[in-house]
Every structure is written in structure tokens, then in C-alpha cells.
Image (cartoon, rainbow, N blue to C red; front, side, top):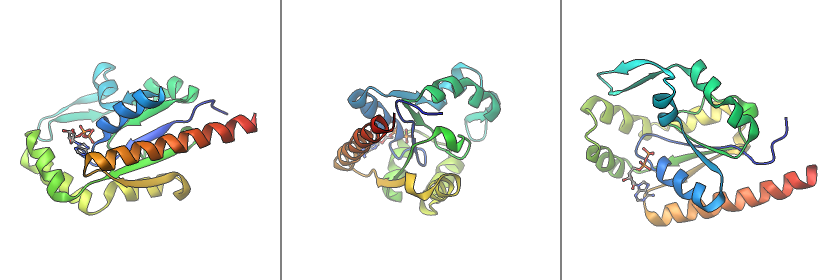
Length: 176
Ligand code: ADP
């Protein structure tokens, strides 16, 4: 099925800057910021609250049903700390944001994460878990990892994604 606008996943360990990037990217491009966190909460795509991790236990089937129509139309920026659940056919670009562990520690500390969750997220970032998950779930050509340590990084990332979007539109206009 062809889309007139692409779907982009912005993923990475909690605290890398997904929401900040998605909000600015949506402003700059007119694409829609789809906060999976928000959808899980608002549309009750979960099986309850995990008290230890202080997060929802996501019902992936329900979540995919909730976003399927939008994803098939295209123009979504999917904001989520996992990416392996979205069907390959929906996705045109996967951006994995990366950050140094000391910076991540500071950002998560500010959120008052429980110690167990904080440590697991730092380990996950150090061990490239989200980047590996992206490479296992999608073709390597559509996966890109970008640094998100500073606001200069963020500006450069947004420029780069915008340039990619412009190219995608040109390529796909020719195809139709
Ligand atoms: P996520 O959605 O991945 O959990 P957020 O976008 O909520 O991350 O960012 C977490 C915190 O880090 C926020 O306070 C945000 O302002 C800050 N932040 C995110 N990315 C950057 C960056 N590239 N440079 C500086 N601060 C950043």
C-alpha cells in the first residue's frame, strides 16, 4: 500500500529526547506526533499498572489496533521506547536516539525514577539494546542512530530528518 506521507519511528531509551524531538519535528514538518505512551493511557491499551516499574503493562495487540488506521494513512511520528512491535510495512524510517550514560543518569534522576528502573535504563543504553532491536526489526538501510546529548545535536538531527523527508516526498511523487 502506498502512502503519500511516510511514517517515522523515533525510539531510544527513556530520557534520550524522543518527545522533545517529536514535538519539534511535528511543528517543523506538519507530521503528526503519535505519543504511544499517551495512547496506551487514553485508550487503555494495557493490562494494568506495574507498581515496581511505575509503568503500564502494554497490550500490544490493542495498541496496534488503536493506531492502525492512522499508520496506514501515513504522516505519523511514532514516539516510543520500543520499536519491534510495529509492522515493517508501516515504517519508512527508524531514528534511534543515543545519549551518554552520565547525561542519561542526570535526566532520569530528575524524573525521580525508581532506582531499579533507572539502572536498567542506563544499562540498556550502554548495551545498545534499542539500536540492536531496531536493526533486528527493520532493514538496516532505514535505521539511523543519532546523538542527543545537546541542543546542537537536536538541531542537527531535526535538520537531517527534515532533509530525509523532503527527499522521500520527491522520490514518492515521482513514483505515482
Ligand atoms: P524521552 O521522550 O526520550 O523520554 P524527553 O524528550 O522527555 O525524552 O527528554 C528528557 C529530558 O532531556 C527533557 O528534560 C529534555 O528537555 C532533555 N533533552 C532531551 N534531548 C536533549 C538534547 N538533545 N539536549 C539537551 N537536552 C535534551
